[in-house]
Image (tube, rainbow, N blue to C red; front, side):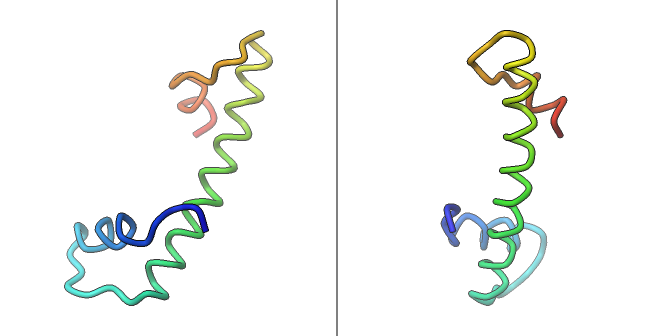
Length: 64
């Protein structure tokens, strides 16, 4: 797992949860990482297609 649990727990709490189990934070972190990898992979393809090495926010928006 790449994402630290504390920020993920904070996200869940910001949505109204009083308490967050370790397993819930871990599950959300793993899910967010999978989504992030998918979006990043597509964004990299868009940047390469445009002849760039730098991934831009536009690439991320397109990939999203």
